[in-house]
Image (cartoon, rainbow, N blue to C red; front, side):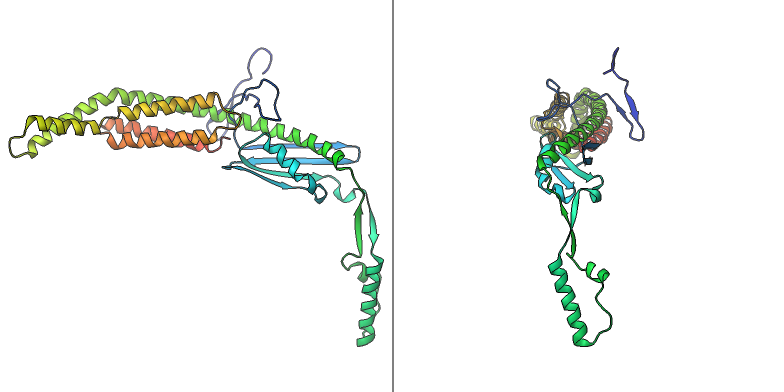
Length: 330
């Protein structure tokens, strides 16, 4: 936050989402003490170059949507023993998403080492070739380029390096790259949060509108049923029995319970967004979206009022947009 006030929100071109300033996210092993968890997107990018004396690493990390935590690492063969440490660094800070991590050691082909010639193997190759020449009367002689081209004749023997010293440099760059990626995920998460809350407000207003229309819709349904039964019954009906049947049918058009549950789900959804768990909230939000969709479908099947049906269509459209946004929340 800048001195004198909060930084202005910016518009994310092409998505219709307004970006809001992100709040740092607290994670085990990351983040400053006292920071509050925030909604985070699963889309992010971080890159860092780090060096020390004779070693220089470039760490590049991309993260995308995934139901689970999936970490893919590409690094020099010399760093193969550090793969578990790299993955643990990600696991300590994130709970969902696919992470593609690329680690390169700049000047990898120039790193210190020494060439080793396998003279014993070369002697076997030369002897075998000369034996073939003598046995089959072949022309030519065994020359250096031919021998040098055989596998394992000339190899590079790497000098011994302290793995802990390498990890000290690599982990510093990895932490900084993850910090950058996390900031991007938090910024995108803030944009998603703003868009979702705006859509929840629209749905809340529509629920209130339907709730106001519901009593009249039930009474209208009761009246229509009475008129229909009066036309269909050829003999004098039992007024008590007719009233009971009408009450049962009218109850089937009453959406009060569904509206109450839908309102409850909206409140829970908003609470989860405003006070997210450090372990991530994407799965919980996805579950609540499914429950809200179920209640909305029930209201649609019961509604016998054109106005309510139109409101339900709008709610479904907003829920679908929220669902799409939730798919990208950690």
